Length: 467
Ligand code: GLU
Ligand code: ZN
Image 1 (tube, rainbow, N blue to C red):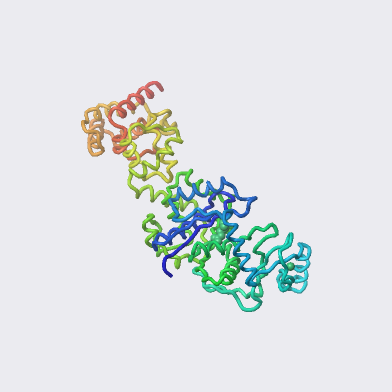
Image 2: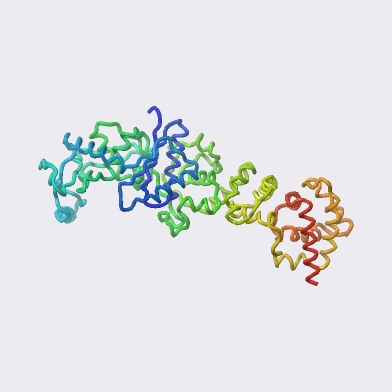
């Protein structure tokens, strides 16, 4: 085939939906894997539903996912002259004709067909009338009466539609604008697209687009129709299942690499592998392994994958990704190195960056309130002795790093003749405010000596004040 040329042609009538993002991803991965070209095309011919804000939302979504394009964005509304030229040529060569039938006449044809037990469709009345352009006339494509239009779908296998089942469909509306199928066929041809992966909601359009391409004497691209993404109840994924816009997942604190990992696996597989880095996906993606059954969107699974990516990536990279979420949570961090260390302690217990930012709060903001349930257990009067002994032992540590912080605990346990819990519980609550914090020694290292001692003092004062 030579160079693989794929495209993503969203209609800008809303945000970037997870289904659309997956389609974009498959086409992008295939182009990147093969060293081909990925084209972005904005299908904005529906002037009433297309908005500038949606175009921007689509750019934002793609940019966040790290899906970049080699050509475009092309806008169909800027290509009307080209579509007109093609329509004129199809008319001239007898592949299309003018039709002046009124909506009432068309309705009548449909009813007659229905009454005869046939598929309701336009009956070809104007096909041989050789009409010219008149006010209100449309242009119809002359579908061959016999034979079938067939293609080898990369996902579904061979698909063959008898031409007799197809309408002489409209390619130019009465207002002179091209229809969707005409514009897509012309664009795919002129942009030299040779591989089309798209949702199987378009499978019925494919024979029409193929017929137009064949009428223009052109070779037809390879198509692969991907089953729709479903919600947990097996209905097509929609808002009532939860977030469907990719940027909502960004706002929830999903990493773009986790999102593309999850989206890729939603309909494509590579053996039993679940975790893929971006490079992995590019290396291993193969449209032959797109599944025939629809993927079911499962937010829990996405969170689990995100958790894996948070753990696998270098802490420095997660720190960078975390910054906007900290800012949004109003958490100010002065010391970047300290933040990287904090991230290392939080990564194993965070499913999203939003959660991680929240979990990081105690490091940087001090304790506003001790978890009341924990305090009941851990802040008994006897805890004061343990805390003060720990303060003394920790104050004597010169190098305040994880590996040097275990010994003082053992010294205090021996001195007070108590177990680890009696010392660690009040201390954990004193420095973190909760019972569920990162590992003790790593946490203390992140806090640093001065802050740790100060928090112990505060806790002691708090317990004494309780009486
Ligand atoms: N503009 C179409 C859509 O958003 C895409 C059509 C195609 O992939 O050919 O559904
Ligand atoms: Zn007609």
